Length: 254
Image (cartoon, rainbow, N blue to C red):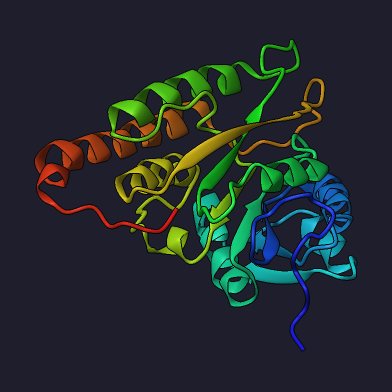
């Protein structure tokens, strides 16, 4: 008998099963902390080890009750999420994604679930609160505003936190959007392509915690990744202007 992945304690009228997908790349002890907290949701937890070279592999291998998928080499956050989607789609109708760096509070996933309207299939984004705090890196503050603007210009939804990785994706719809990016840019490109496919995107407030000083492990490289973001948005805007107006939108039930 397949596992019951529905969260009966969420208070949601949403039908379908949920699975948690956590991409990990060199997050060390923090990955273990996040995963153990996620297990308290009583949902399947799928951890994608994206070619970690630090202690992450050893730490997550010692955690019972999770499923681990491995990339031999680092392929990027987007690639790790897609690998997680492939597995999650076999056991669930929705994938809850959260970062392994400790900034998200896994228990907030219940608020995201509750926010899903009955008989609807939206993409839910956790809008991080307290992003003006002194411990929040400038790259996160600037990057959020940068991406919010260009997601909208590219034909995506009006967002206040387009860079949040704490989300619920409908499956298999999210796997069929032809997203090209496989690194950090995946998370902004999929918002635009979801809007093109008439998938509703909604935002729900969530907590966020940033470790002081150098305690938080982020693999976002400001210059490289901002340039990659710019390239992604250039491609999306070009497609929107030259191709998209003449193509019929795919429609998924909401």
